[in-house]
Image (cartoon, rainbow over all chains, first blue to last red):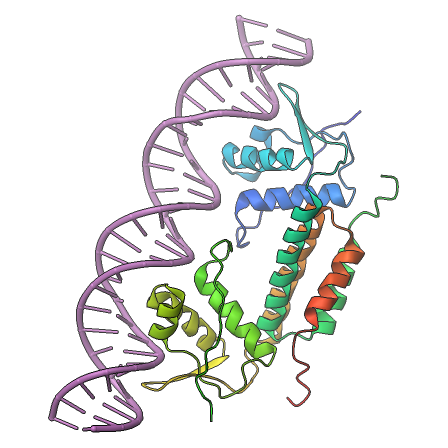
Length: 136
Length: 136
DNA sequence: CTTCTGTACTGTGTGCATTAGTACAGTAGG
DNA sequence: CCTACTGTACTAATGCACACAGTACAGAAG
């Protein structure tokens, strides 16, 4: 069970986000969309670093963040695995960060002078990729 | 016409955004929501800097960005004024940046494990502050 | 014992944000 | 003309986040 499998993570040099954040976002999305099932094993720190031609520390930092957030579970000497879902943040903290995200998006829409209805519909479509989480 | 008026801009020390971006976002939102009318004069670089207890260079940088984006218009020796609206970015660039914003928001929703429907409804409410721009 | 795994350090270099200080150009009013 | 306001353009120094480089240690598997 839980074969390591390839796990394609893309790192774009043109992406303004720091590399570690790209990894965090990438892995998190794969978990959220169900592409990475609970219990699946992730590539090793050194392995992924070599595959992406980046520093192992950068991968370790990303994995550490994902572990701290509860998405991954580490077993010393074995590897990292997708953890079983659980409540990670307090509701207050969740709402606060959601507020920030909403405000940031509104700022972008205003900055681009983008039609709000169009922005909303694009977002609705993009949100469909997130797993329904019915069986949770 | 176009009195300088107080123009309350808030700078939060706890805000993770750089100060100049807070000013840019703040001014842009006041324009987008109609709180700042076309032709209105903005506080002077040195005046706003003193009011916010920050460096004049930081204010100047923010104003320069807003001018470059077409939100403001500068008249040497006179001051800065809200410019008349015009198309600033190419449609391709606009769409590209909108894509980034959408992806970033989806990442946040996934990271917080926030119910997508709830996120969407909160965003819809927040977008209502943007001016209808019927007369454009 | 060797080799894989994650984890924890100490540095080093780079780029960005901010502050500080100075200087120059245009406008208005005495 | 002179002074005081406006925006603008530099340089220099500091602090911080990010990534890289190298080394080291602990647990698991053969």
